[in-house]
Image 1: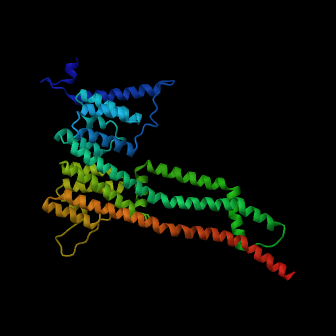
Image 2: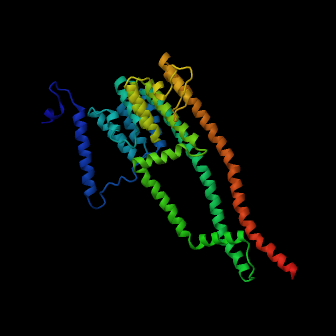
Image 3: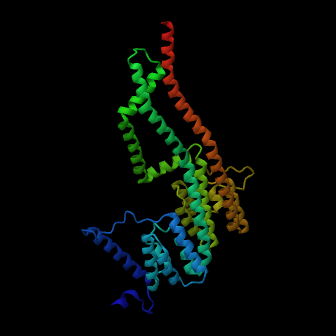
Length: 403
């Protein structure tokens, strides 16, 4: 019975049939475990792999393969050295699947939340060309660059939020603990307070007695963002705001372009077909508008258009009008040069490095520029509160002088 199911008429083992059966068995096992009661239920809530852990996994695998260690033995070592239990389980499953003729890329496809489309595509290329060492070395380098880029982008976006949060915390402390005591000292005098002081007191009362309203609005906003992320149109709206956000729009756009260049150049260098490279690169870029743009370019290339023309570059006229808002014109010229000379990989690497260096400088300059801006906001808020506190004293002094 086994031979009839998994071997063709020539006696060759068909791993696709076995992989389909394995997938169905995994689904059945998960369903059985979810219906089970007691402590034997497998909880997948915390089964995750960070970008750093994935880079360490690929880095070690690259070292083993480039040291001419057998692929199965390499995964055997990885199982022992991997600390993340979920990633250890996956590595062990890949090692076992190799014995059954199931490719590494096919095993990785079972875990799309751990291995992205780029890594799976490159491993698939290796299985066809037997060049895993070079591919893993390049992937190791690109993963590290992506981790550093994500960290810098996140820090550039989070840094002003942290400063504003500290400012808000300080103002809140003054409103809750300092302003009420000063208000009590003026309550018995019967003196009419200045408008600015009354305004600050009203805000202080809001923070003391109606803080739950502010908290409810904050929680409602977080819930709204979560809900929008779950829908296609909501995600389109959020990413549209991101790429048009004042000051930060350049960081969002430039980082997505770098992700595309890194993945696309690596795929092309690994001899992946052009349309497949564009399709995989579209899945790597995080912004959904860039995903749509790359898919549109891929569809137009499939219809016979060149990439540079799909980007919007037209050199047939004396005056060129470039209308693409997501990719810069110089990028389209680089692609056009490749289409004429066949040197895309080197050209993309060079422009990708230039964009990365430019983005790092921009983030560094932005952090330097935001610091005095935040300090000015702090001084305005604190100064307003101090002036509001001091104004009644001046009024009392004038009353005392008349007496």
